[in-house]
Image 1 (cartoon, each protein chain N blue to C red):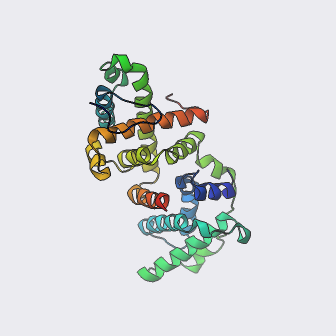
Image 2: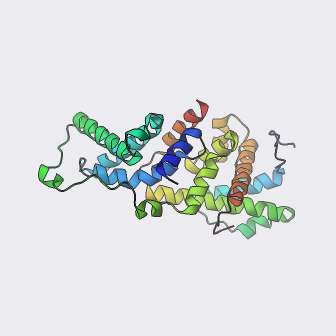
Image 3: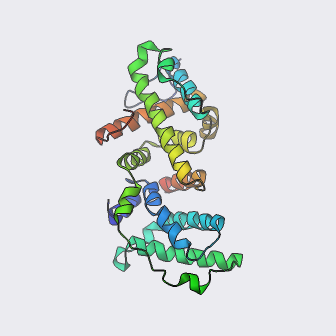
Length: 89
Length: 184
């Protein structure tokens, strides 16, 4: 299967890579503390490429949790809506 | 980054609004304690003030005072409006004795944001729209990839593609900024 989005920067992913990415990020979202090495073993040919992505996924998740912990009453959904409206103007 | 640079960056789209939000969140909260005694109400007003600041940031005129002063006046105005509407009791005058307008600059302000946080928020704000939206929906709002796909009108595969690509671009941007990241 081909990607539905053409990437101008030549960043492309195989189905296996996207499955790996989706499974890993979902596990992070469920607070299962997934082991990066365990997931990378599923795509040994993409180990280096996917390691960067999974590490970034962990970093972003960690920062979001920190932000939520510090500002529990900030409505991020509303904030994002305003940002999107702002970008469209 | 100075307040003037911050405002300019947000208005030009090169700096994410969350930077202003984080810089002034605690300070706005401390101002509001003067007028709003209830913690829950205060947090609601705090969010209102910073959201309003975002919407009206283009109206801020540096020649009329510092950003800190502008926000302080806005906080006061929103707090008073809130109190009028809710008919809440204001703190007694005795409690207000000695309260001064907070200082505008200080080391604590710079301490609030680490280099990593600033770089990360900025980099997310600089991503192309599909990647930015995918990451916002997934990480900020907690949607699953299937829900992101539904909201964006794409397949799940495309939603994941934009998410993964967004993380690659994010990593490249951070690397370009020469930020030292603990996990990279």
